[in-house]
Length: 112
Ligand SMILES: [Zn+2]
Image 1: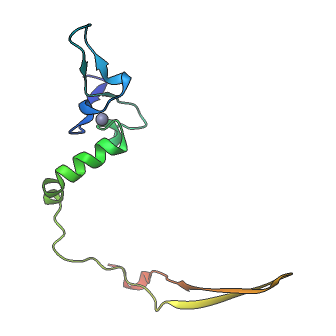
Image 2: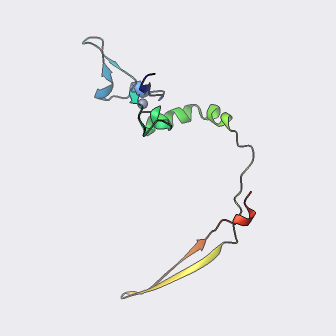
C-alpha cells in the first residue's frame, strides 16, 4: 500500500510553483502534487488534496456528483425553545454601553 495519494485537484498540475517542476532539462513539466498520508490526515479530505484551493476546485467541478451521494430533498429542523432577547448594560468611565443578543437553546425534550 502506498503512503501517498496524488492530489485530486483538477488543475493542481497547472499551478506555477517550483515544487511541482519535474523532468529533465528540455522536457520539464508541472506535475500534480503528492499528498503524504499521515495519522493526521488519514480519514479526511486532506489526504486527497494538497490545499484548500485544490479541494474547492474539485468540489465546485463535481458538486452535482458529490451531493448525489447524500441528496437533501427536504429541510432539516432542530427544535429550540422560544428565543430570548437579553440586554447587557455596562457602565464605563466614558459612559453607559449596552448591547442585546438573542439566546437560542436546543429543546432536548423535542429532539428526535
Ligand atoms: Zn493540489
